[in-house]
Amino acid sequence: MESLDLKVDMRTRTALYLFLTAAVAGGAVTFLVDVFAAETPEPRVIRVEAPQAQVVRVEPATGHEVKWREFAEGLEEAGEAEKLVLVDFYTDWCGWCKRMDRTTYRDSLVLDYLSRRYVPVKIDAESKSTTQYNGEAFTYRDIAGGFGVRSYPTTIFLESDGTPITTVPGYWKPEDFIIILHFIGDRHYKDTKFDEFSKAWKAKTE
Image (cartoon, rainbow, N blue to C red; front, side, top):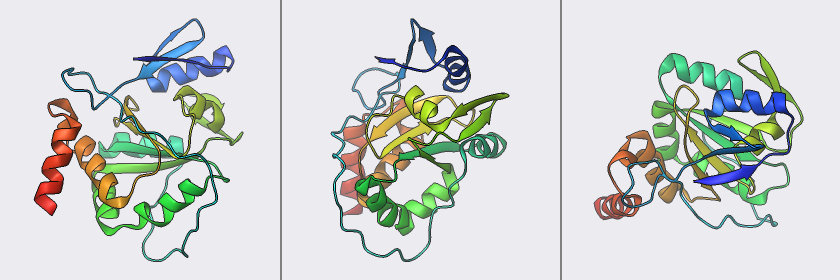
């Protein structure tokens, strides 16, 4: 489990604690879990090297799109619908974020499963705009900091009550991302290693 230093004020830390259900100690929020480690029943994180921001050629958008929600709105909807929450952290300058929007989040299989099992939320990790949670106001930048987001895109999966499940950094192709969505959405992470699930999925779909 990883300890992350946050440079935010105590009121923000308190608000973040409420929705992250994390341990706040000595100015650090400890919450990152690893969905995909082998023997532990604890959720663990997918560890990949997130690509650095760079110029990426993106084709014009076509087809259907994800209906992204605002953070507070998404949590409220997820609680009512008893769905998981997928939070996509991006920045305006992130080429890989744009590429994921134009490819992965336009894939028909991803869109179908995402709409059935998740409430999708998109957050500009550098935005100073504020949102509300439990009566507390905090910026989207603070939310990103509270989740330990350090590269873009980063995807956070939450329970319907806002409890973190795992963090998935980096760009993912549709054929790989759909595996992650099912692995988490169908709760396979509770009793199956991700590598085993991924191999079985690919063998089944080849």
